[in-house]
Length: 380
Image (cartoon, rainbow, N blue to C red):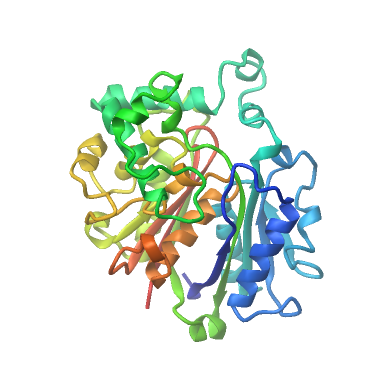
C-alpha cells in the first residue's frame, strides 16, 4: 500500500436479540466512544462510512438518519450497503487516495424489527428463484453444506463441532448474543432441523447491535497508542448461486490470495496467529480454513479435528464466538476486524490469546459467500 494505515480505536455495543434501542442511539454510542478513544472531536476532519441496508432498515437512503449520530454532520459521508468489512475497505480506499487521513467506520442493524428471512429472499433471481420461494439464506446454505460434505467426506459431527466450539468461545465474550458454555456436537446435532443437513444451532442467528472503528494514516496513526496496522487487504466477487460451484469458497480464496500477497504472507498456516472468520453457518468455517490457506482443499474437517483452531490451539479461529456468537447484518465482518485488532492489542480480556502479532479477519455478503473481503492485521 502507498500509505501505512492503522486501526487506532474501536467500540461495540452489546449484541442482543432485542436491544430495546433505536439504530440511531446505538450508532451514537459507538461513534462517540470510538472518536473519544482516538482523541478526536466532531469538529475534527475525518470521513465517515456506514454499513446499513435499505431493505433491512425499511427505508430508502437508510444512512440519511444516521448522519448526526454518526458524527458525520458537515463531513464527507456515505454508506456501503453490504457487510461492514466492505465499509472498512471503502474507508481504507479513501485514505489511500490521499483525500483523507482519518476514517470513522460504522456497521449496524436491528434484526428485531424485520422478518428473519424475507429481506434475504430479495437477493435471488426475480424471474425464477424468488417467485418460487424455495431459496432463502438457510436453504441455499444447506445446498452449499451438502455439496461440500459430499465432495470431501465431511461429517455432520465435524460441522456440529465447529458450532459447538464457537458457542463455547462466545460464552467468554460479554458482548455476544448467542452463547453456550460447554456446548458439544451432540447438542448441536440434536437441535431443530432447518434444512438438511443444517440444524438450528449450526446457524448464526441475527441480532441487534452496532460497532465502529477509526482508521488513520500519517502522524495520527504513528502517535496512536498500540496501533494495529492494516498489512494487506483483498476482495473478490463470485458468480450467482446457480452459476458457480458450491463446494468451495472461491471468492474468499481469491480475496485471501490478494491480501496475503500485499502483506508478504506465503505460508498462512505458520505466519498467521489468529483468525476471525465471518461464518453465517458452521460449515462455512470449515470451508474458510481451506480458502484461507490454513489447510489443503477438502482438509477442513481433519484440520478442525486436529484441535488447531480451538482457542488453545496453534491457530485459534473465532475466539470471540464469530458470527455464531453475534451476527449483526451489516456489522458482522466489521466486528471480526475489531475482534482481531483487540487480540493484537491485548484488549480481549477473558478471551485473549497470548502472543497474537498477525491476525486475519474476513467478511462476506450475498448467498453462500458470493462476495468476500479479507484483512491482514499486524501490530508494531
